[in-house]
Picture (tube, helix red, strand yellow):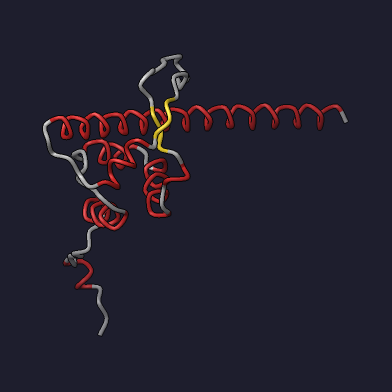
Length: 151
């Protein structure tokens, strides 16, 4: 009876550790997204200062942000300029992009962070660019496949 209690405790400890790691990863991704949003906002403010002002809807979207001065990563770094867009102002496609970005890891996340600011305006463009970069639509047939083809 004692061994089952120990194994349950061990399982609980393993699950707790896994949850902590996942929580840490989500916080780090949120922080990276917030930094990218800050870069986007600063780029937009530079354009507006230079006289290049977008349509009224874009100006409204810029003003619809909340500051989160206590946003931090697991390492304790705090960014006083971290902002996030109000969920109420997001469309379904905006949420798709946000969730898609959160799901990216490794090379895919590096690809996303290397994109130029404002190079993607909508979900369709994101989908198209991602598929162009990571999915080869032009399949080439190898000689081995040709020789193994049955009539």
